[in-house]
Length: 126
Image (tube, rainbow, N blue to C red):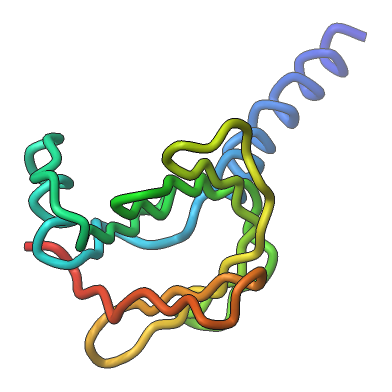
């Protein structure tokens, strides 16, 4: 009986990292434009309206913050994820689907709710 409880506890804790990992993008580092990378490095905004940053946890722009909630699909270095976005000046959050595509110059991001939105390419921050 004790062995079974210990085994279940070990199995539960072994499964936990996989569940946590599923809520982030499997990328290393930060990707962004000049102002986004400056923010990634210092933690302070330049105040620019031209601000884009992609991390494994979120997509941040000058006017919005979209947290990665669930990784839906992975194809090589391309991802589809459910995101929860907060826009500057608006109350509450909105759910959306982000398509994050890798290219020779970095990642490009599109949102299902607005086909006109294309952010990037965002190169790896140095």
